[in-house]
Figure 1: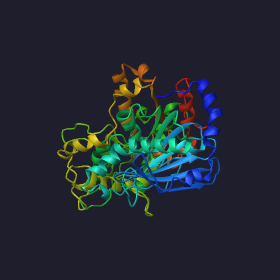
Figure 2: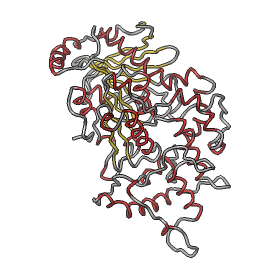
Figure 3: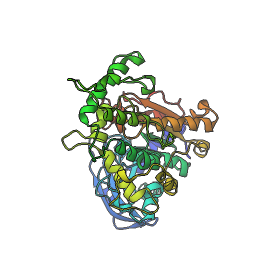
Figure 4: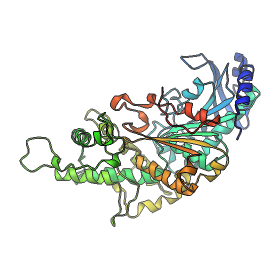
Length: 475
């Protein structure tokens, strides 16, 4: 890894305009060429917009089918490289201007003058919940799992060299959700590739989260006739009761739960008694809620995945878990469904499979081979730490689909592996954020969402030799 001292930063800052003063022909001349084995399809100059400079937009393909988009500032390149992860099952390149931490978030890097890149992770999908591309295709699963990370970096570096006649002095990776999983994988499989990594709400254990936990959430919320048990009305009732009991546990009445583990909830008053005129929860609804809170367990009570759905996440259930009665939500069904059909098992069961077919006693073990391909929850960061890497990990306590408890569990294990939290803090800074939805997609209490976060500024300062970050909130 190449770290920029203050002196080198000054030299690079003065040299970067000379490197980056490119004419249009330097961009369009890359079209229909082959560079370092990558086929360049299109290359065009895109105008400056907002805080982002004019840039050369390049679409390239790394064999066999990884589509990559690279954006190279026409002026003011800062000498660095920024790579963005993708969301869900990926498969789409056209969202490169999305918010700071969601799908293909290239914008934060480009606005700061970085050469930027992202990919579709190796396949074309109808949507980010479409997993049919993986049916009987272990090569595509490998590309999605890890290979696209390294190939995107390789192709981008070759184009940086061709366009600027220079090399990137710093590399940063940022992603959320699946992009957060990719960030974790990057630290494991490519420990020397990125100087800094930002891992947001990481779905770091896909086989455990999407393969085991999500089907069990769906099974717990489905009655014998196939009907949904907890819906948006129950979510509101539960959320109001939770906030009434937990809001001030942290000493502030602000509509935020600082840590749901600190509040001991008693929702027995919501149980129907048989003569209730007010809203209440039936015995079946109370049983489903209990299963959602404790997380997936085997028949003998063994915890199959750390923790359940956190208190304080109820305002966001409509999108992820329950729907809202108006066609919205229940994305958990879409992710769990296609993952089980096409991605979770060595022999894909195919389109007829549903999450209700999941067997908690036998199916988790069947996913072991794919866990090696997809997952990034290994707590051993020694190679990344030895390379001098710095990582910011953040997660919202109100995330109802990618549980924050897994991130805390991983951090505690990583600390033990490193020889204690003090040692880990030289490499990893963890931020658990009250009231934040998954990746900050939906605004929470007080309007907190992805736009309220700025992990890039403290990461850059940390890489420049500053202290470990104390906050990732935007100023």
